[in-house]
Image 1: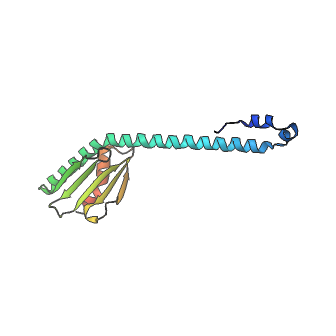
Image 2: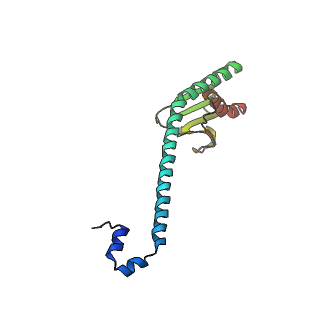
Image 3: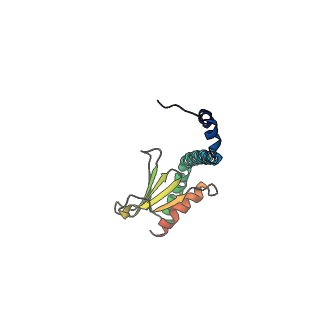
Length: 159
C-alpha cells in the first residue's frame, strides 16, 4: 500500500537539526518541474483539441469540396466535348472519404483524393503505392471551390 506524504509532513517527522538542513533548492526545483509538467499537459490537451476541431471542420467541408470537384469535372468534359472524366465517391469509411477521378477506360489515368483528418491526400492510381503522394492542407482562407481547383488542376493539366 502506498501512502502519500507531503514534503511538509516529511520535514515534521525529521529531528529539528535535519529539517533545517534540507535544501530549499530541492523544493524550488520540484515546484519548477511540476509547473513545467502541468504546462506541457495543458499544451498537449490544447493541441489534441485543435486537431479534433480541425478534422471535424474538414469533414463538414468535404461534401462542398466534392461538389466543386464534380463541377470541375463537368466543365472539363464540356470543354472536351465528351464524357472523358468520371468521378466517383467512396464513403465506406465515413471519417476517411475518398473520391476517384478516372479518365477514359479502366487502364486510363486516375487520381485518388482522400480526406485524412484535416488534410487532403492525392495519389495517382497508376503509382502502385497506396501512400499519399501530395498533401494539401485545408486552409480557412481558401474556399471550397478554390480548394477543389487547387487539388485537381495540376493533375488535369497533365492528362
